[in-house]
Image (cartoon, rainbow, N blue to C red):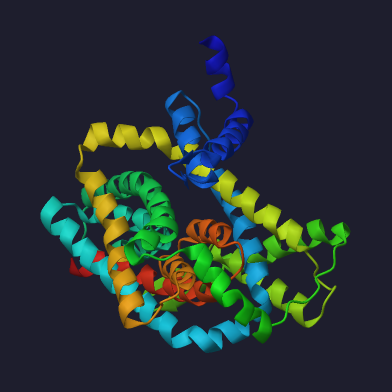
Amino acid sequence: MDVIHELTQSRLFCIFVSMSLGYAIGEIKFKKIALGSTIGTLIVAIILSCLGGSLDPKSEPIYFSIFLFAIGYDGGENIIHIFNRTALKAVALSIVMMLASLLSILLVMKFLHLSKGMAVGITAGALTQSAIIGSANDTVMSLTNLPQSFINQYNLDVTEGFSISYFFGVIGAIVWCSMVIEHLFKRSIRDDAIMVSHLIDEAYPPTSRGVSPKHTIFVLCNGLILGVLLGYIQVRMFGTTIKLGITGCLISGLLFGYINHKRPNRLVISQAHTKFLKDFGLSAFIAAIGLSSGSKVIQGIMHNGLDVIMASIIMTILPLFIASLVAYYGLQYKNIALLGGALAGARTASPASGVILHKAGNSVPMQSFMVPFILSSIFLTFLGPIIILFL
């Protein structure tokens, strides 16, 4: 037991064991269905967390920023064409996701009697959009007649709600966008991705990126530096401050990928390297979530009962369910690979996009991911002030 305790205190041991064993578990098939390396990594990380392993949550953005930059770089080649072709549908889907999320908030607050702080925390966590907390906090600070006791309790509720619901938000989006929609609409992400890939190749022929490894670290580090700087940009809209945050790394990836497409061999990262960056960044991020939040979820159930868990599940699943139906039947996202990418984007669920890309085996889901992601990163932020002022 002492050996186990010593090992679980090593953060490096925990994160790499989570990724290694998680990959092995993810390859095991049950009736021809494999969990996948992402879910496998999460399972191992949660077990290690319950055994005493932990990881500083502040390390999560490091891995996530690498992942975001890599998927942005891959999608940068055709971003202008993608935006022109999908803008209207993306706007509609992002608005639907925001309204469906608002409906879900109303339901959980009415039937589970949540405080405003808990509602803000759960909403931000379940939608994996921490900017909601920032916009809600700005609104709370602007209300001068609030007693200090309310503010103190509000801050505690926000922290607790977010720490529990974020776990469900990340995993729920991955499972829904990469697995559930296949069963819901009786189609295969892989088959649908193959179906349209040749059309994309004809419209936008692939270009050579070069394979020189000497550029990779230089381009990656400078891309992440630019992404961090972009993340500090703040825009004031309708009385709410919107900050790009870690999304800046996605935007810098798009920019670098687009520049390399227009001027080859200037900002080169080979496809093999971007694949590694995506796989490593996503796996490490999921391991970090499991290690930092796994035991907290168990503690949250014991402390709050099932109310917070139920609210987190509802806030995670209901918006995705409504948006899936509207997207498939109303907006004509009949291709499941594109539907999965669009849903992940509208839910700002970047980890889900990584799993969908792996399942598709090509870049087709990215054609529908980027624009809704950017739009929803703005739209969902307004839920914070709405909860504080009107609910």
